Image 1 (cartoon, chains in turn brown, green, red, orange):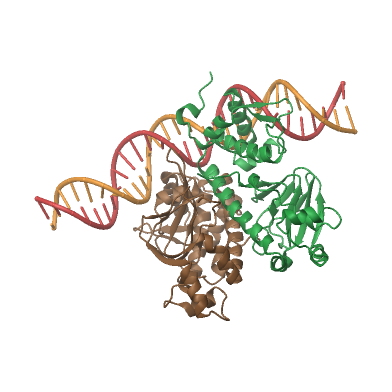
Image 2 (cartoon, helix red, strand yellow):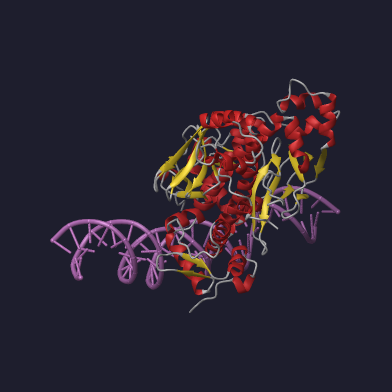
Length: 259
Length: 259
DNA sequence: CGCATACTTGAGCGAAATCAAGGCCTGTGG
DNA sequence: CCACAGGCCTTGATTTCGCTCAAGTATGCG
């Protein structure tokens, strides 16, 4: 069936490192599938169309509606992408981390804003040079195409979540996805704190913070997760969690009134 | 600001016609940006990796979870893309029509199902040949990349709709978008019936058919749209409709209790 | 004409939002 | 060291928007 663990199955791209001279040029070249030849001229070209960039927690580095001049590849940290409505309602459309590209969802202007929720290191490309980059390194275009395809898969999954799932199912889906994302990137069984706040979670899942909190409590009472004192969340029963997320286990997955 | 009329601003691609020998090879070539040279050899190659395909109303031509072997370009008609849950809940992730590509949102398997809601004519590509097609016609890759980018813009807009908008705002957003889509494709002020049923609309907007019906009535009572006897919908006040969709006119856009 | 399908409208209900109160941790300053 | 303020989170009480259930209307087709 649908495989939403794609992101973890391939090696992180780390394109950023490939083009920061003196950092990791050799290995970076391998990462982006350019093992064969990356001449000094190539490196010089890459450096000319891009710059490393670090933004601090809470800093906004893409503003919806601005002319889409840049294109980013995340190297470290987590950022949230979101859209706001005039009256303050917000929808987070995704969280991006190492290896992810930011800036695809744009026509002439960005369709979203982006803010770091941790310190984020990335590489900023000039969007007008993208065609030239593609021309010189077809492997990058291919990578980007695959990434875009996968983003569409994830977006459709998220539409199902937002349009049709209950609060508990939404939380379970998110935790399941996040758990998989971590399990391949970092040391496996994660008792790690989530980098985002309850407010971010609510804006991602189309809920309020209170409902997120209640859904977490429900899952905790079911024994599927545990919530640490520092609000860190660990998955105790990953299979059960996935069942609840997909509403597969039907009745058994339903939340029993705890009276 | 955000421009979600992109699809209408460019000429329809009609790639299908370009590669159906004897149909429209010459003009099709122009459509996909290959005006300069399209040799017999090129045409032969295109024909070898693709086939015209017609599906009838109600027919499913992509099934979620199936191996993603094909890739489609719509030439005529409208189809719905959707995801189902085991218990029958459904989310329509988009409607596609002439010029649109279908099959991007797939890793190794399709992440969605597709069903024609009118007779649909399209061109079916072999997905494994996609790289070869790109290699021979870089313009197609470029088109597809732009299309994918735009799909991401639309998907994020839809997430905002599903996560944060009220029923009336959702309907208004949809009608606004559909109205623009038509106004460039067909003769402008459309008193045309929508091709999709209320059930489709509900599954697209994350609502029930009853709520869709009520929201349509609300907009009708506000004088923003009119609903014909055959359920055709015309937009009477497009500016007002857009304001309601974006919750821009705040209080004035709010639905007044009609009592 | 009868039946099926698609849609509309009303009544009551329920899941999540809103409103409100309180707990926990951290940092700051007395 | 404690007192206090301010995030951030949890939990409870109440409200509300959209869902469910139910009835009725309109259109199209054999």
